[in-house]
Image 1 (cartoon, one colour):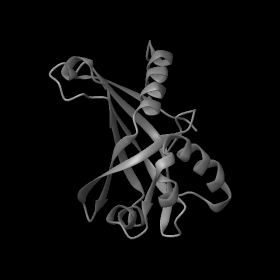
Image 2 (cartoon, one colour):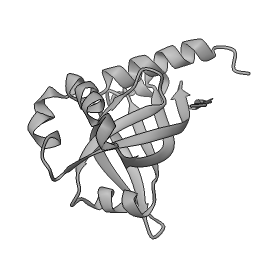
Image 3 (cartoon, one colour):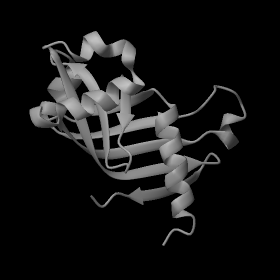
Image 4 (spheres, helix red, strand yellow):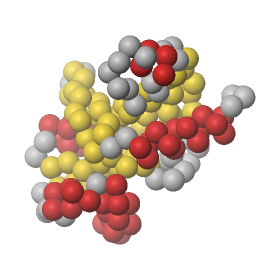
Length: 151
């Protein structure tokens, strides 16, 4: 049992709310592929959402293999980051958001990224959901804690 789990989850929520971008990792035939995406999380940490054009390599990769990782951090590109930055890797499975859930997810997504409204409302855009299984939270350069999501 992790002693400070409530604090870690609270810090994780703060980080996910504060950071607008994440690196999404997919794969194609065993070859990793990374993409920068604008994302948002739900309140209970079980879902991360991002939008992408259906014509992208990342969307093609997700349709072939739904397993993904998302990397979110708060580094400032200074030497102090080695001790002060927090880096999180979320692993899970991705799928396109079901039509009946899109309005709620769009509202959440656009509250954080209002400048992407025309992009996410385009018929060529897919709103995607990562069902998070585990968060790997790294602090103080090498202190890693696993937070397993049970929903």
